[in-house]
Length: 178
Image (cartoon, rainbow, N blue to C red; front, top):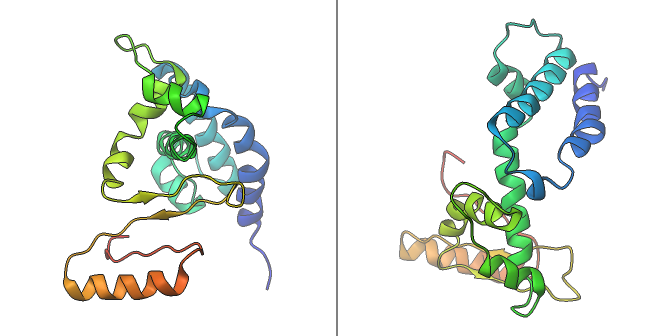
């Protein structure tokens, strides 16, 4: 099966360019709107060059075609990942303590307070979920149990599935829009 040249170029962008753009993003993500616009422009130009789109093509369409997230959404995702990584640490861990005690002055953010703000919506979805602490055996893996139950039948099905796959990475989506 021949590989599409666009897929190769998108893969090169994801593996060679984007890691440099996103390096340590939770630390510098609270950049000004002007700088964020420049970052979006770089991604937009790269993606348009990859697919050979005209300069007036819609950025949203280009992102859908290349299957690459918008910069702001990607920043939120990476901040949520970092938030989750820190929340999994022991209560005595220095990063965990700093995250729990962080504050901001007006619109000025320190990196940890920005991560907290960006992760608020994500944290609300975790209400009622169990977040398993990081252990030496599970370092590098993530074990979150998120269960939303609407009927008793759903609960039985979810319980059965979780029993079968306990300890493995499991993703369950029941919402049709997902």
